[in-house]
Length: 330
Image (cartoon, rainbow, N blue to C red; front, side):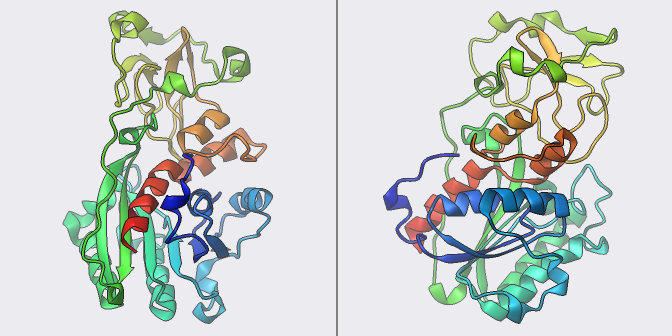
């Protein structure tokens, strides 16, 4: 998570926001760094809510579908990383036919009632292509119908000094009467980090080392001195078993693959990496770093739940950089 200058806060500071489908609080980390004030949060995942409460001393409400819009406090900003499984290429891609897909219209319901100045939404990159673009068209027309001018773009976290290839679509929606006629998403950054810049020491990661007879490395690619530059893409250097999902090994000199809440294989949810000569998964703390969470963030005691929660979260740094651009125009 980046440090925010006071000049980048001026138009967002003290604005009230709500955190829908809040998970463990990725949006909250970003908005709080601008000194905005959270007045409401909601999520259906009880384990994620426990982690949220530990970190923010604020217990999220439950299923947003059961909450009347009049019971949601007045707010200036609505944040929502609405459930993505219905649109993800790793799922069945049923979109609005899936119950999780229809949760987008809960955002519309609340925004139409409260008319906040700004909506800040996030979903998987495949959202833009789902159903031949029809899903995106429905979203854009729905937002326009309730009075919002929408800017959207797919951003990759590895273009913003985070060593994770994580493609996500972001929607920045300004209430039409604000007459925001220009908005630009943050430009790609020259500075690049690799996975080895954020990993823990070897003595902290023994539990994540994979020891199997069917590990196969492509030695020419696995040698560290082969890389004279940092790649912002994952660099595949080997396989386990047949090399299926969760069975591919990547170099520490590139970016991590996309963290996921789901998936199988020995490297499920984090991928496998050749780090200091050892093949291993990432630890929960390393996953937290790849999503921009601070070292002070209190994680779940279960590694399995941590992987799910960080896989479902968003990259805080990317949201912060979007907010810096928003601050320039509101």
